[in-house]
Length: 327
Ligand code: XIL
Image 1 (cartoon, protein in one colour):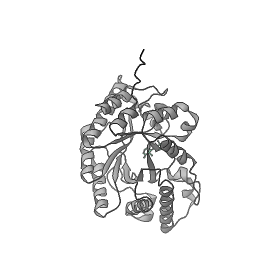
Image 2: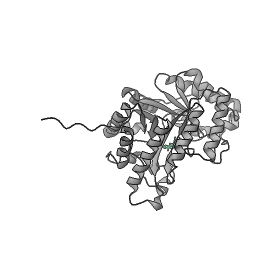
Image 3: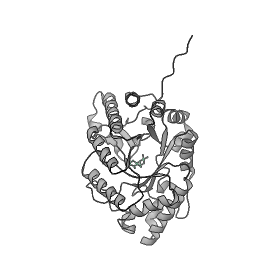
Image 4: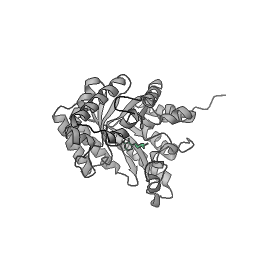
C-alpha cells in the first residue's frame, strides 16, 4: 500500500520557484500557540516582526533597549531557514511614549536616531536580510509628511537614515516602505520622484516596499504591475510587504472569500509578471490581523483578510496564492 502523497505547502511551492512568501509575526503568539509556530514555519519562508523592531517597543527609555521580542522573532526566522525583514527604523508612529516628555534639541534627536540605527542594524547584522529603513515618509497627497524626524533633521533625513544603516550593514537590502502607493497614483508618483532623487545622489537604497493593505478599495492589479515595473526600471527591487485583503464592513459581498481569493491570485500574478519576488502577508491567520484590534478598523473593515482562518484552516485565498505560484 502506498501512502497518500502529502500536499505541498505554500512554502514548498514558493521555494520551488525561489519566491519569498512571508508573514508578519507576533512574538506572544509564537510563545503561546504551537499552531501559530507550526503554520508560520511550514507555510512561509520569510518573517517580518510585526511590531517588535519598531522604536517604541524597542526603547523603554532614552538609553536602553529591550530586544527580547525582536530576538524571539528574528531567531524563529533563522532557526527555520526563513528570510528576515526588519521593520522599521524611522517612522512617525509607534515612537516611545517618553518622547513626549523629552525636551530635545534637533541635534540631540539626530544623534539619538543615528545611535538607534547603528545599534539595531548592528545587532542584527548577520540575521536581518532587508530593512525598512524609512516607513511612510510621504503624505497621502504626495507631499513630504511632517514628522518629528523631518522637523529635527530636515527633509534630508532619509539620506542620513539610509547612510547610517549602510555604515553598519553593507550587505542588507535597504528599503523605503509605504502604503497607498501600490498602484500608479499621486502618492506613488511622489515616491517615485523621491527615490529617483535619492538614487541620483547615490543614497544607498536598494528597494521599495509596497504595503498593499487592500482595505475596502482594492488597487488595480494591472496598475500595480506597471508601478512595480517603473520602480524596477529605476534599478530598485520591489517587494509587497504587508498584504491583507478586506472589505468595507457595510459592503461585504456574499462571496467575499472567493473575491478575496481572486484578488490575492491577481496580485501574485501581477507581482510575478512585473518581476517582484516577495509577498509578505500581515500576519499568519485572521485571528491575529491588526484589523481586529487597530483603532476603529474593526468597525470599518471585514476582519478576515489573511490566508488562514481563525482556526488555521487554509482559506480559498491560500489555495489561490499557492496555485498561482505553482503555475
Ligand atoms: C500595525 C500592526 O499590525 C499593529 O499591531 C499595530 O498596532 C500598528 O501597526 N503600516 C505599517 C505597519 O507599516 O507597521 C502597521 O502595523 C500597519 C500599517
